[in-house]
Length: 143
Image (cartoon, rainbow, N blue to C red; front, side, top):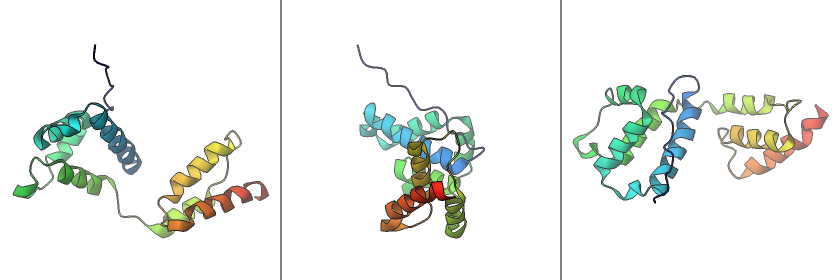
């Protein structure tokens, strides 16, 4: 009997659409690989994307514009949703949010560091990211 792989829940476009998109996209990619649907035709991959993304995403899809060469292709579809869900980044603001983040009383060190790494992804620190996260983690008890 074939193993049942659960499908991702529908994409939530309310609240923090950018974070919801990042998580949903990763779940979608894993699902497509695990079910080998990534080996199907582009048209089937697009249909799978929209079916899993849900009704709200289909409504958004109906407002998007595609060139003739982009129709029924998964990469342009994902790129259009990426552009829709991810607002232009304000690096200064993202760094401010990162620098304000303090460890919560009920938060473990591991949880705090994971959250710092997540926040740092938007800060464009490049190769310095790990060093900056370590510095922030070391200062947590001094604040």
